Length: 141
Ligand SMILES: [Zn+2]
Image (cartoon, rainbow, N blue to C red; front, side, top):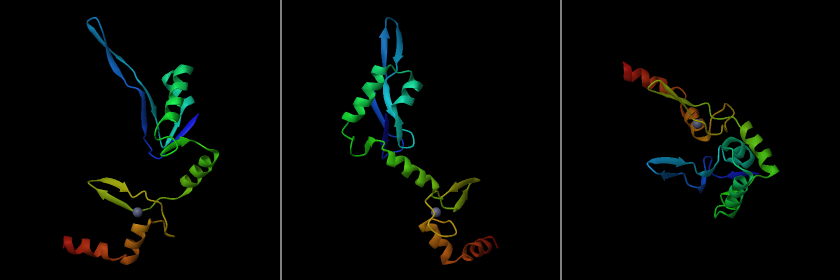
């Protein structure tokens, strides 16, 4: 069963992780959580990954469908989502890059201009393409 969330890293705790005290020892009892990755949670994949029993998997699915968020920010994946996911992935992202302390930061917003910049950076580039290099030259002179 596949679920979709508005939040790319949504996490729903069905049973919290807790510490059990057995005589002199403390042992961690791993809880049960539905962890969304890139807006998606697949209960079959999670079952395989976490070695859940069928009962646990069913409990997670029931928990999500009974949750307050279900039908609002979270719902079952429909076949239309698959189509949408494909078209979202096909949208190119903005080419704007800025280097801070040797690390390159990409803008990542969807590109809207013909030369591949987002709305914000397309207008910046169009305003005065020659201004920025001149300013740098003056500052260093
Ligand atoms: Zn941008």
